[in-house]
Structure formats: structure tokens, C-alpha cells
Length: 110
Length: 78
Image (cartoon, rainbow over all chains, first blue to last red; front, side):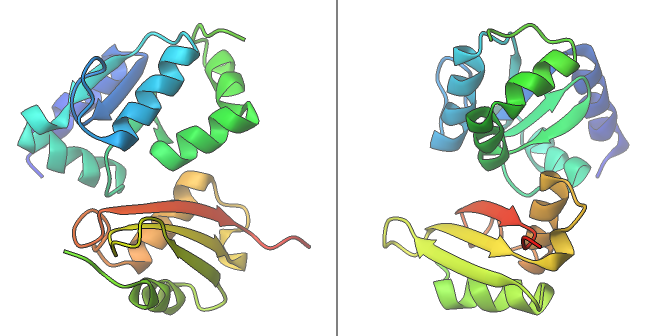
């Protein structure tokens, strides 16, 4: 992977406290799994930035190598990889995601 | 491109020999599966690490031939 791509990813996950690599945009998700995570974050009232990997093939491949995770979406909070759609959904349903956001100082509805 | 459930199970068991694996073909299209995997190898690992171990067992098929595999992983209860 080109170092430039890694650097951009590191910069993005540092600059945005909640960041979602996704297919499409938060307003127009292009994949059901991405849409599911957007919906969870929106329901929780969490402010996040979406990066559309379909618009950027280098990031699309780069993020998979960076996290050793083969699929999109990928959620990052404060620079830390939280998980993909299954993990985010499981954490949300158990209330763990709400705790996680709180522990990381991210505003979310209770 | 599709992959059959037996092949997914075989790959997971090759990577995690003690694993109990259940595969459900969610739409019957050979492209959208859910897998429930229980293995002692998951003990003490985070969910992200557990899923990474399954992806490693699938040897790069996830995200390629295999478009959608919803994962649920756990260590066996003592």
C-alpha cells in the first residue's frame, strides 16, 4: 500500500472523532450494510463523517489493508477501529455501543 | 461469483479446527450467508480479533467471491 494512502487514513481517523468508511454517502448509502450503520449512528444522535470509498479506489483498498478487515463499512472512533456492520449492530443492540461512545467522550443519546 | 456453504464451513474448520460452525444461506442465492462460529481460539480476543481470525481462515475470499457473510463469533461457555 502506498504510504500516502496510509497517511491519509491516519490523518482522517485522527481528525474526525467518529468516522465511517462506507459505500455511498450518509444521505445516499449505496449498500445495505453501510446504510445499517448510518441508521444506528443517526438513531443514536452521533455526529459522524462518512467517507465514500466508491469515490476513491485507493482508499477503498487501502482501508482494508490498514485495518486487516476485508469489508466495508468500517467504523472508527477516536482513531480506533470499532468494527464492521455485524459488530456495530451487535454492540448497539446490547447497549455496548452507547457505553463505548460515552467512554470515548462522544455525545450520544441515552 | 458465488461460493457454497460447505466450502465456507470447510475453510473455517481448516483455520479453526475445534470450531463449531453453522452457516445459513440467507437468500438462497449462494451469495449472502450468516455464520455462527464457536471456538476456544476466540477466548480472550476482542470481537474484531475474532472476526479477523475467521477472515484469515477464509484466505482472502471475504470481500471477493464472498460478498456477504454476517458473522457471529463466541468462545464456548465453561
